[in-house]
Length: 235
Image (cartoon, rainbow, N blue to C red; front, side, top):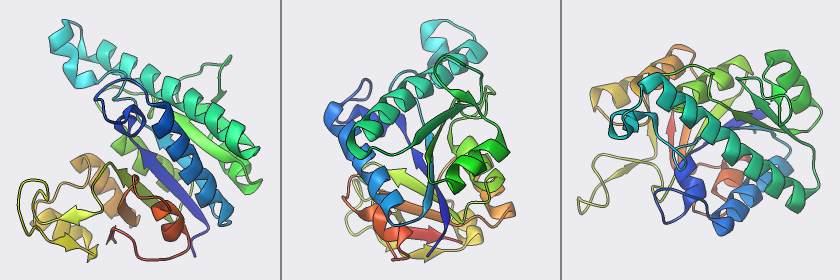
């Protein structure tokens, strides 16, 4: 069984059926899944996305600079992380720490790698917001970056309604085949979209296992934490 895992949650997972906004039901589901993962004895950190609040790639639609748009997106991750922190604390009565790449001292601790590791070693759930504090990246890259920095044994890439990696879009192609396991090179050769290319290359270079699974499936994250084969493993 792995000892330390990072879970990548998208903003869309918090939005529920809508593209933007928040769903209380979805928030409770995510908090429950994170708590269940921790209950297996694994140290858990969570990188939270912000696409349900604002997406940086919509800068042109709003007539603003891309850097400003990405700044808004990073703030969106903080909103989601504060919501998740509150719900986890209400449900689990466990220590939950929010750390952000951009200092927001009244709401969160600044992200310091060794401090984050210390929180994990003490049994706290660590939520990570603001990506890596830099524009022009989605939260895919910071998710891999944080997993590597924290010495995680793997990254759980939570998808919404997709239970792994397929050879074609299962919603559009009848008979699309799901892969149980892939190598990094197979993902590249088949041009399969797991996450942003820069994030995937970073994972490959550091041999970080990627567990791609459906966050909507109750208990999926917990099963992975217990060493069971769920979704698609890239290693």
